[in-house]
Structure formats: C-alpha cells, structure tokens
Length: 129
Image 1 (tube, rainbow, N blue to C red):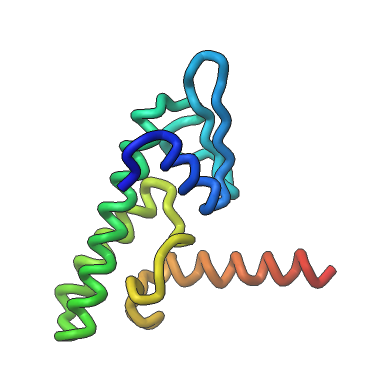
Image 2: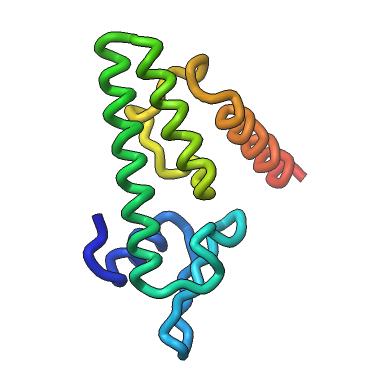
C-alpha cells in the first residue's frame, strides 16, 4: 500500500496514468480512458485513499481466486463477481489484475470479458490501419 504521494505517483506512472501537481496543491489524475472517479482534482490524501481502496479490493480478488482453485465452489464465484462489480463501479477495468487473480474466462463476469475483447479489437484496428 502506498505510504506517500511520491509512491502513488510512481505507481500511477507505471500504470500509465498522468498525474499533474497544480499550483493550488491539488492533483489532477487522468487515466488512459479518461478521468478517474475520484474526480478531476484531488488532494494527495484522496489519491492515496482511492488507490488503497483499489489495492484492497484487488487483494480480495486474488484471495477468492486462490480459494476457488482449491475448492471450486460456486459461492466463491459469486463473491468474486461482487468484488469485480465494486471495482468496476469505481472505474477500474482490470489493467493491473494479475493472471493468478483471475478466474477462468468462462467464470469471469461477461461485461469484463466483453470489455477486454472490445479493447483488443480497437487496438488491432488502430494498429492495422
């Protein structure tokens, strides 16, 4: 979990986010796909809190996926979907989700799979022109 704003900026840079410090002391955080739900302008604490919440939810996905591999229970899939929906509602699209934190494609939420299929098609179309 990030401890200070410079850790967050380093993390954001790795995740291809643009972070700009304004003269007012606020930060503008913009993702590849547009503004993040913490708002266009955020204080350092808001940025840190937002990314800490994302980290915690991603950790839950990892935990649920690991346990599903052990027992394969449908209840774990339901819990996993609930956490993905929470993240999705925050603007998260799974760019930082590690393969070990995923369920098999057939068990992932349909909107998640559809989103990534569309992203891949858009990427291919853009680069094949």
